[in-house]
Image (cartoon, rainbow, N blue to C red; front, side, top):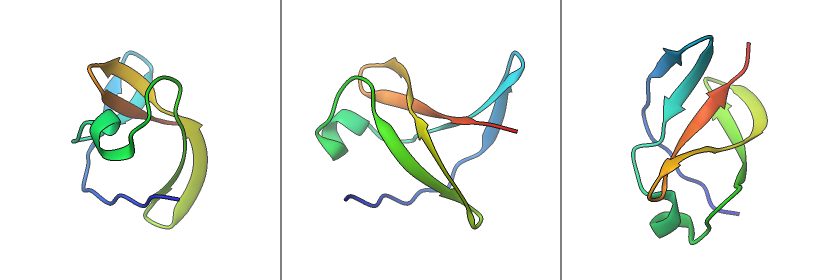
Length: 64
C-alpha cells in the first residue's frame, strides 16, 4: 500500500465535484488505467476510482 498526502481544493464541474491530484499518478504509483483508491478527507474515508484527465493526471471524484 502506498500513502500520498497533498493539499487540494474541491471544485465543481457540471453537477459533479472533484479534487485535482497535483502530481503524475503514473510516475508516482507506477500504475496506469482504471485506478481504485482509498481516500481520506478530513477524517472521512471512502473508496473510489480515479477519473483520468490525460498523461498520468487524475481527479478524485467526490460524492455527496
